[in-house]
Length: 138
Image (cartoon, helix red, strand yellow):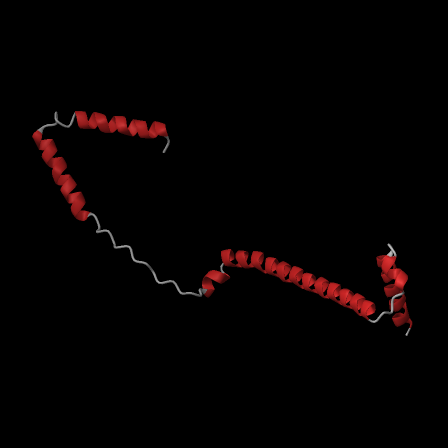
């Protein structure tokens, strides 16, 4: 209801209440009896009961709303697990590269000029490519 409807209802109620005292006694008695009959016929309010809901409701999950939720959740979970797997893979690759570099430094296979050269990373990359090519030809 909008405000115009509410204002009209208040005006009608006010007009009826103003003329209530002017009604004849027989009319007020009939209205009182009709009200008493209506109240007697009225059904008693049923107490609000909480229905016990099962913890796992398969029917709700198989409904269209439940399937819609699953259809959103499954790709999101797959994306999360996929990204976590990629992160782990990249971390393992980085750890392997650092371990290879540490092993080369500790075994003194690098020339002394490599430590002072600004292109040390380029040297390591070229060495790694050379090793990869040697492995591929074998």
